[in-house]
Image (cartoon, rainbow, N blue to C red; front, side, top):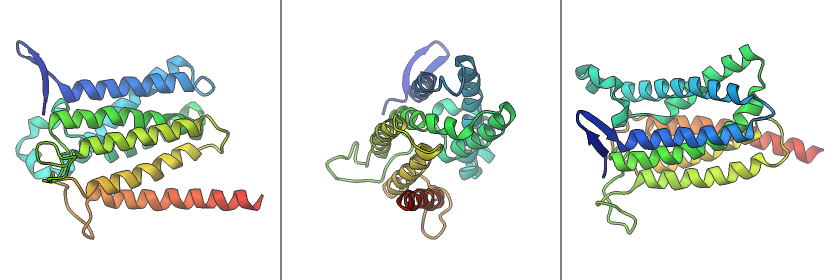
Length: 241
């Protein structure tokens, strides 16, 4: 693992923080280059700035809640996100809630917008998971398989590769004519499958289990059922035409 890039006196630059920042930058560039018909460039930058704040707050809040006993005894570490400790689903839902009210207030078509943001989410997530790998968080179970690194499943890299495939698929879908919101539903469908699968290989503390599954897996099931229903409904409607 390589958690620190370098230090300048009392200032330490963390690999995780740099890669997360690169992920946000890559996602922002993608959105800016695909949203000309929905938002102006200035609106893109303003919107993404608030989304980043909402995403970080939501992701950190859910991580703190799933590790509540630790942060209850170490409250000053709650704000130290540069050391790692973000739960993706927390940020995802917080961003969705903010985006809904923002678009409603600005009279922006949210379905068009979430379609554009979907490939960008997968793209940014690639960098985030690579950051997790270097930071040493979100690690996998002990394994002797050929892909093992330092004796563990490199779950961070598994998910980074999965997100790359999702990005490739969504980017192609975005270039085709489709009903508004279609790309976003495909994102939810594909990512829920990826996350549910990866969780079986995770070796870090997964929080409180329900029905023998981690919190992320239970959330993934709900998202999968919803998105699969929407996709199936659309398929049926298309066949009737």
